[in-house]
Image 1: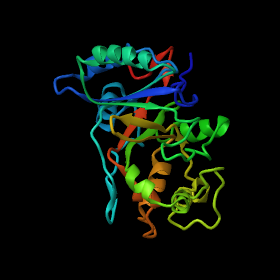
Image 2: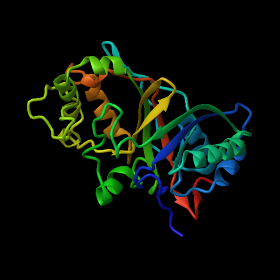
Image 3: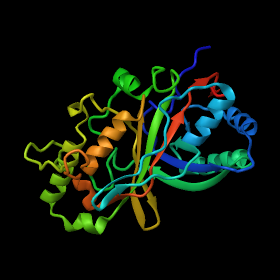
Image 4: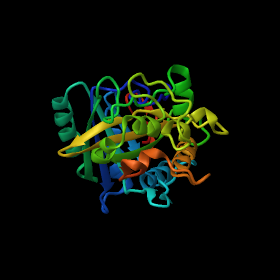
Length: 293
């Protein structure tokens, strides 16, 4: 059989999702980790990512080279920043029912507890057909079909063929600040009209659409976005998830959002804050299991 990408990467968004972040236990050797991970069945309801330290450990033990793997960079410009967080293992659960997610996560946590400690659990969902909680459409120009596969799946250069590199950020929205903006100011912050999603030609250079126009970069900075809103009590925002053949495109977008290239910061920073930042390698799949053992 031929190795292939984890199917959940290019699948459409589920109605509900759950993101689990783990740290490797200090006494868990690589042999135990490989055995545990290789026993997990990977279908379109689950995507698994390995952090930089775990990727290096697995690579050293099994001779797997992932030259493009690195830690998430801590980026800052003026008062705006994108932090770097700790994470050795990432699970993206996908389902149409929240109850299924709850029972599945109990299973994964129990299966992994001998080698990993759960450090974060975040529930997400599709809002109104694919909107961010601000009411604006998320990922309007997302690559699809063959373009998505070319953009999101590695060709063997930065990572083994069939694998993917994913950037994960948790953004916390301040809805009081957002609501304090006029409708026009909100549209200008995004660069699109909320009522019809039309791009605004007269939007300022700080508009999110202009800061992240993927086709305007050299080389083009397309990523496969699989972002979803999240909610935890009174706090809410967006789980930004971007798959790529490497991290280069994401970093180009992140640098431009912060204004590290020209000093112009993305207007999104007026009402949202990145509170986590992680990079993971999503190994290819063979016969329903991760190709790492």
